[in-house]
Image (cartoon, rainbow, N blue to C red; front, side):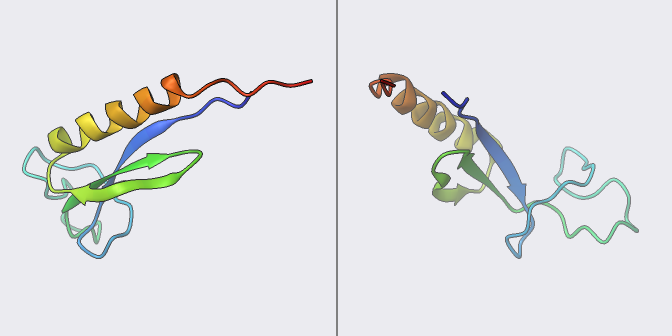
Length: 81
């Protein structure tokens, strides 16, 4: 059985994933990086892809992440014969 990962991806205002180092304000640490800052946070499941709508704050995305992970725990395990 494959391991399922449920993560939170930070997004730029245009919806692309942000991998830049940022300040607590959400602005890039390196002003020459081309990063426009983080606007939203998307919960992403390795099995289902994007889960719900993006959240404006990471702290608001965390309950959705936990809830989706709990759904996987409740689902019956697939049996192999």
